[in-house]
Image (cartoon, rainbow, N blue to C red; front, side, top):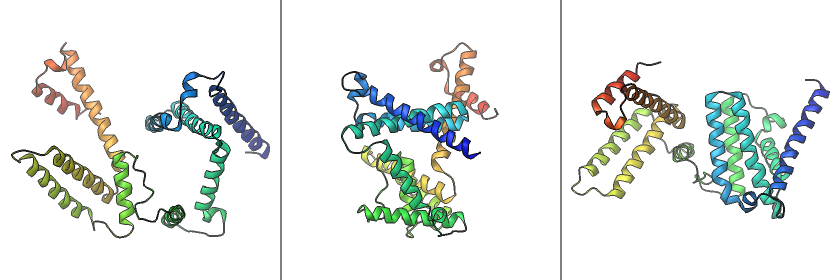
Length: 273
């Protein structure tokens, strides 16, 4: 790309972003704005922000560039929305948000922006974690697990907790050890199920232990548990849809089908590409 093209591209980008900022300012105008947009707060739009992030992930999984572009736009809107709300309260604006992440990325990449060279991905990762640790300490987050958001999806949060603990040596030596723990937790759940009066709270606790160990097992095997579960969800959806299709082909609802019929169709679905 020539210098002239680079300048033009940056100008177009700045114009597009500022147009979005102007649109959001008009939507939030107390007198002439949209009633719904005016009523929103940081807290009220958090669910939409989270939803848009997941829709970006879904678009990426589907691989359609147009959908990825559109969903990224929706996510960008959420950032502009949050920034506009903060700007109205005199706290920060979109410029501050951009400057903050720019400075953070420069600070976390000294091997790019200073003479502090590194020679491997592992070294970059170690340096990144060391810098993040110092950043947490500067905020008063001095405990090992500080800074891991409690609002993360449970699987993602479990993985982050385990990775953080593993950095200081609190970890299983290998996957086989985790499997042994899985058997132990499964037995504890079975014992509770077989109790004369199973305790609902204990059942929840034991199920949670099994799920936590399953995340740990995936981690020790080098498998991303979130992606693994997402893949299984897609597989289940495809196979269950096949069951439904077979029932529809026989002019039956699933409620009218026997479990044996559905199991046979399920097994058939396993052979489909």
